[in-house]
Length: 172
Image (tube, rainbow, N blue to C red; front, side):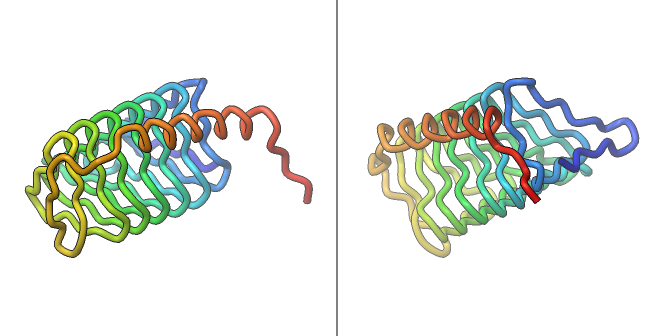
């Protein structure tokens, strides 16, 4: 898998994490235990840091970047769907960002919240705990997130990562 240091910026990946061989990790990136980084995902910590908590999945084709003043932080037990763009934002614990969403600078998705598929969160948006953000630009619907769905999805990716780490092999 392509994992790159950039000068003195060196990724730190917990030994229990699973990073797919077709993912790219560059620079100041920290990945926690039992987290999974899937094919085509790019985590580029060149202008600042990216932190991924424990038991969090960054799914296929997602791009995580950062800017000098704004790190990109994803907490524990999070699900970041396919083809998501996160940049300079904070996704707190047990939250889900749906497929195709864009979450920009200084956005905070608070604990247990959901960003619906294909939603766009503009700079500085706050998604309150347990809320659902949906649309372009996103509209906040308080109390509409389903925490049990996110917990189930997060656990399936922990299990899938363990399976892939133990049994995946290239055959060409």
